[in-house]
Amino acid sequence: MSQLSLKRLEKSFNEARIIKGIDLDVSEGEFVVFVGPSGCGKSTLLRMIAGLEDVSQGEIEIGGRVVNDLPPVQRGIAMVFQSYALYPHMSVYENIAFPLRVEKLPQPEVDKRVQAAAKVLQLESRLQHRPGQLSGGQRQRVAIGRAIVRQPKIFLFDEPLSNLDAALRSEMRIELMELHKRLGSTMIYVTHDQIEAMTMADKIVVLNAGEISQVGSPLDLYHKPDNLFVAGFIGSPKMNFINGKARAANGTTVTVDLGALGTIELPRTSTDIAGQDVTVGIRPEHLSLNGGQFTIDTTPNIVEHLGIHTIIYSTLPGGEPFTGLFEGNPDLEDGKPVRVGFDAAQAHLFDTRGLAIY
Image (cartoon, rainbow, N blue to C red; front, side, top):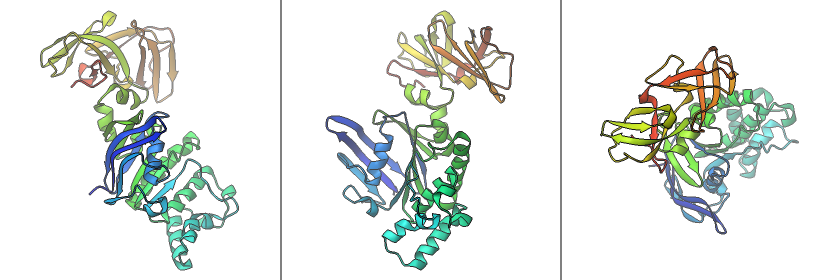
């Protein structure tokens, strides 16, 4: 049985439909990440699960029980927000203990849970400090500790790392993944950062305009995106898209005319797309300076030398932006023509509706 089940879930504000009939099952112990651009509905969906937003239609089940009409405190969830929301006049101990004080648990039980959470989060030496004496990462750990002591069925995280600098975000990602392994709890995490989604999730839910575009493991979404939106959203730098027309399709290969770039044969089983407009996708990291089955001559407008790799940005004859990512520090310069190549098996193909063709 699923730990969390969303059935035909909808949310509307007056005439505006924000969540549009979502169905989703989350298994016990999974780390699930909701990802998507700003305004896609991911935070609204999380707040509905938490009970902070009413459900317009559909059902939310937690542990097999419909919780639509239950207040947040009775749902068996704990939420960690983007803001730490700590009480500045209270010690770390009292901040973590606060929800237990509200529940009026006896002091021995409060102390037991706070000490256990502090040990998990490596805050034992900080319990008598106040939030103002802590770093940003330590404050976020206190906020997480306040969730842990409630011993919830499900942890909900609403962009908890967005206020941290890049280096600290990287450290906290690792800490959260280790925390998940130690607790074995179900965690649902909202972010607009697809790198966080790729590195942390057991399962990613890609949202677009209030609907689920695709659900799968990080590598499933990377290697086999179902549509143009997921293909462009998952991966950094984003996938290159080249407009073309399918000239022939024989059940083994599809021949695509890419205009000034020439024609390419892609291994596909489709037989009914001949004559249709299509889009060929290739990830920047799958391009090579050593040639390939299909080559493209281009002139970089911008070259970024990042040490571990180099990125070029250019424009194709058809006007499409084109990005290449190469290991190390090859001899690449702004305005210096370069030939790049890729193998047909690494390319993606999408139809006029933006759906993947396999």
